[in-house]
Length: 233
Image (cartoon, helix red, strand yellow):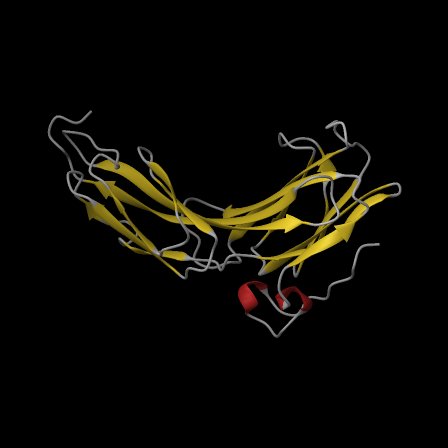
């Protein structure tokens, strides 16, 4: 039942046009399963990825029946230009889990257990981004607001996070000012800090019980240092 998708190029649209560049598709199904899926990509090492190939992507899917009970023994497959991944049961705090190297421009999902199924779900990923301000490795003052800039935009929402601060933004504005106190600092020495920007797109899944959603998120960031701030920890 799984649709076959060819690899029409590398991730991030670096190759020629392929079937995953055709837009979102909410899919279809028997209306007998509850399905919630999360696809989360982050740098495979440290806080910064220099391109979309240097990413690690996790797949987490919950599959439930009409009573809300976990559905075991299902075939859950995520497909991308990097190939198909058949998810294993459990092991990540979700019903079905898997992972894949790289960050693809789109992902497809299928769930099948006996006569029950959801198929043809396809979601375009938010474009892979870089944090362009401040510079990676910069030393910044800890007693002033800090403007963070990333590019490109185009996601449904964005999140900005440090060790001391976290916010979910309205849309994907491409910049945010971290307020005073939002960076970890010391009063006698430089302090290491990191800034993470996570952006996501979501799509409602059709052919499921009640409402179902598939979410794709991508995270990138930088590491920096914060100058001493008197009377901080």
